[in-house]
Image (cartoon, rainbow, N blue to C red; front, side, top):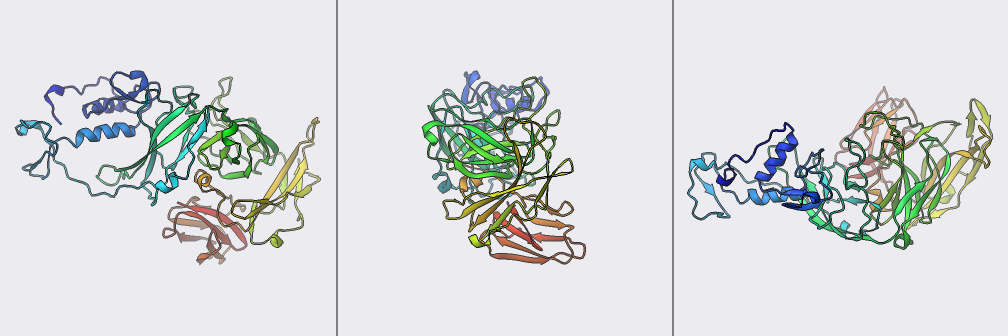
Length: 525
């Protein structure tokens, strides 16, 4: 593109691709984005911004609104519609007196015939976008047809005083607005939850960018508005430390968000991968009264490499307000107050439970719920401990299904505690469960069950196309059921106990895999 007034304007003495992209953005009509650069800025980002057209030091992407500015400039430029460069298209006639010559350096271009991704607006209309000030929130970008090459964005629009940062496109449809760690140290400026009440427009988008094709991405967009109200924050207070015990019974505490969420239910989950997924459902739903007793999963989780200079404790507790975009999360700062790398928390096994059943059981009627405590035993340092068996009262969900929790617990006698502390193993028994309890919250959580047999592998989970089963028993029947119990696929393992199942034709969602007499839940994406 050549314009006389801009000849030679694209200069950069800094050998960073982001700086070069920044200057090229200006040449294509894009403005600064950070509110601190108000002169010539579209002010979509707080502080100095986060995207390429900002003045931040970690710029990796163009914001949606920068892309819109560039597109507005590009579509007004004349171009040759044939490779011989004899046919010029100048739809907008920016200059009626222009005489087209070779010196204008007009480019050849061709129109793309690409289907625009569509956001499912019906799903959006069912959501409540109100949050208390100082509260984290998640935006889910729903699509009627999900494809592997789709990526998802949620970028704030132009505002006088922007409060929420823009983030790079994600493969996940869930986009969390919370404090973001800066590799320069501390947290990204402007990423803290806002304490300012008001209405904040945000553009949701789906991009169909495909690196294997020589075409530009197309975006499907939809504007929504998040309202921040003057109420106490919905916020995690405490319940876990840096190192916790697998199976520990502990009480999670939180601020309730005031009157805004007084009639809402809370779901409590745990992540073991520093918040990428929240695989473990600790409590399906509970009253929003500020505290809830939970049993931490009976698994061992050590520090992991999650992309920082040192390994971090990868476990996090998350509390979602069912039917809302608001959530709270336990400490996830990479460094503690003394500057040492810490992260969330890890889980270590101080007690060993043996002869345990699987962690979740689905039955059709109450009569199918096991009535005996089985043969579960508990050991500490090789010494058998007394086991207390108890069941909780039935809990009824909105779809009519019920939940009974079977709990085996033993007292922690390692130290002289002032009050009794317990470790526990828990089995959840769902009665008449047809679907997951809350569609919106389920969109933010990946439900994955761990394989009990360490020698057996079932992967990947979630699965896109081929499900691999390795080292199961030889010549055993493998059945895949829909979540409502319909048989969809029946196969058999080979002589080595291996099997590959093509699930590409199945719709996205949850499925049940039964191998011999064991059952797992997998997610098709």
